[in-house]
Amino acid sequence: MTNTPLQERLNWRYATKKMDPSKTVPEDKVAQIVEAVQLAPTSSGTQPFELFVISNPEVRAEIRKVAWDQTPITDGSHLLVFAAWDNYSEARIDAVVADMTGARGEIPKLNAYYENLKQMYLPRDADVNFDHAARQAYIALGFAMMAAAELEVDCTPMEGFEPDKVDDILGLKERGLRSVVILPLGYREAGADWLLPMKKVRKPLAEMVTRVD
Amino acid sequence: MTNTPLQERLNWRYATKKMDPSKTVPEDKVAQIVEAVQLAPTSSGTQPFELFVISNPEVRAEIRKVAWDQTPITDGSHLLVFAAWDNYSEARIDAVVADMTGARGEIPKLNAYYENLKQMYLPRDADVNFDHAARQAYIALGFAMMAAAELEVDCTPMEGFEPDKVDDILGLKERGLRSVVILPLGYREAGADWLLPMKKVRKPLAEMVTRVD
Image 1 (cartoon, each protein chain N blue to C red):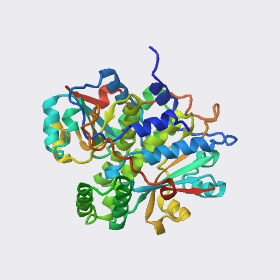
Image 2: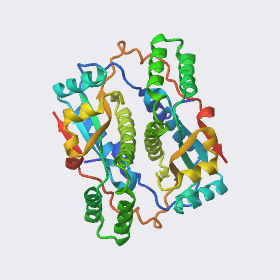
Image 3: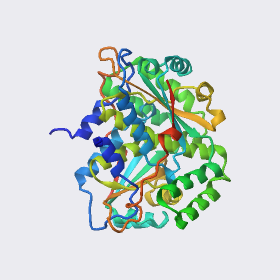
């Protein structure tokens, strides 16, 4: 049985533990990965996060220090930092509606929808809203990793860092953002990565999937 | 300028608002989408969620009633329900380690890593752990949507439902699970979907992306 292109790609990718510092991801591939983040869907189309694309070696070295010294941060050529909104606000939601109206024209149903959204989101605790925004960033993280695999670019999703310190390094607090997950991009160093020869471990479908037919 | 296959796919997909009830997603495509969920990466490889694949029309009709009556739930042919662990537990993490050891052999460093993980996760509030597990499900949601687009299957990511009621319908509480997001699969009904002819609205890169070079 031959694998489909999708299966090939899903099995090719892995959380690269050692990247080759001599290789650089070409900018046109970085742009395609960034575009996947831009085009990823989000709840009510709010896109409640921003993306930092860091090639600067000094800034990446600073981030590595507060991220358990994980080498792909500096051995890769680019680091993506997903930074979610610290809260929903009237201004942020109004800007979403303005963008939609600009693109699609005035739609009364749409205005009513977002007025209702404000009634629901704005009274909630900031942490609840931040968690909701962070989930949307994780959809985009998934899109970025799938895009990277298609382009044969390696990446390493990381939650193992001190968010407050990354926020300080990038000046996120002042912008109402909080770092949630980071993703170095680069190329695997075959022969130097302990994880690469290991079998991919996933729960069997029988454990993870329930059919209701 | 021609689009890359990735760009074609990212622009082809949209949150389908009207699906054609006469069309059924073939089981081999459903299987490939489910496999993308299975192979999606998760924090420390815990895969802290389960997937329900529901073709049963009565069960989908029940869910539609507690999901703002959104028609793709029943007009599509399959409904995916992502249900995250309600908490991390010693047994759940030990099972992950057992799976890894089964596949890769005994690795002392790995045991130490997961002992440390337990020290970190188990004292936390259940809600903190559930939120963390839910984020992992959102990565898999992203993988499922990218896979669907590649297979030219439509889907509609939905948070608009009453999670407690979906949990009741599927008996999730007893299994230590909580529904976080649902995804009908099916085929767009061109001509009947108000969203299809609308321009896709996304933030311009200049607003959403900061380069640090």
